[in-house]
Length: 155
Image 1 (cartoon, rainbow, N blue to C red):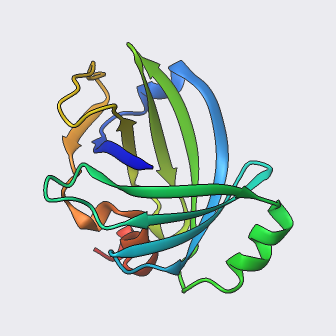
Image 2: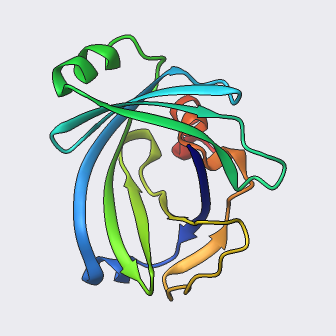
């Protein structure tokens, strides 16, 4: 129940030639406070409820609990969320032993493309593809909960 991930800006769309899967995502937050973000997500034809805790001092690890819920319930819960539902397309790309999840944002966050890679440990190494840019793991502005309240287009 601990998520270890690193986040990066994406500097080129050449990753699209290697996409394994892609899904449209809509997500909102019932609570966006860093200590306990509660997220509702519709990914493709599935719904999810996720609780995330505050990140540790390194910014790489935090508690995460996720359950699949009926998509009809997720749609109803999205109506209860704080302002700022995030819309994006998530692309999954295999790079070496890892799957990178690349999010291309729309709406008020249009123009932002970020990649995440989940790791087994904070010291695990991974291949870095040519389209990977600056690391933003420790920059809270790139958390989806922050982006829902402070859209990228307003920076």
